[in-house]
Image (cartoon, rainbow, N blue to C red; front, side, top):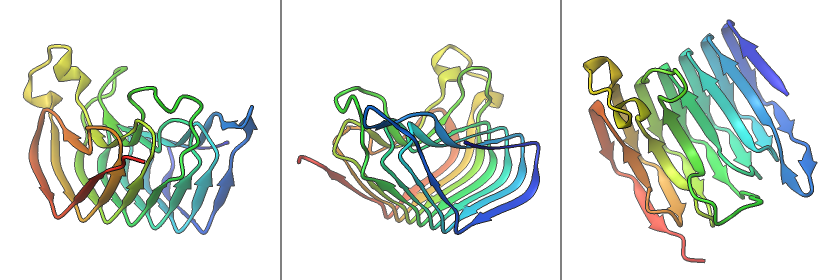
Length: 193
């Protein structure tokens, strides 16, 4: 229901965004952020959507201290981001209409549909908890998969640390076709409930 396009220096703090359920499941996207610079979402809650947050072609993004609950599909979805910190968030209590469907994500970065790679990414201190088939942190590169092996197609400068990931999927943390990647001090636990 909320979209920020071409904005500068926006902070949302202490916001609660609740979705609309259709047949008991979340639909639509809670928050869109597009071609913006200096966007912060902090100490807020987004619940009961298909996707909590979709952001692309943004600079200097901070997603800190939030809870994302009751999503039907993905938690956080990013494309072509230049500088982002995702820190101390909770993603969980998913409510999926297709729990066995593959390729749902807690946090995903992608390069498909005309979006380039992302750079200067910090993912730190988050709790990701899912009992259905859902990736933990999934930084994939569709450009490379589709044959683009150029330097300009690579994700760059990624730090993933101190996260707790409890999921049923084999992709606890996945990073593909990227330079300058550090993954340290994360806990990845199979959820066999």
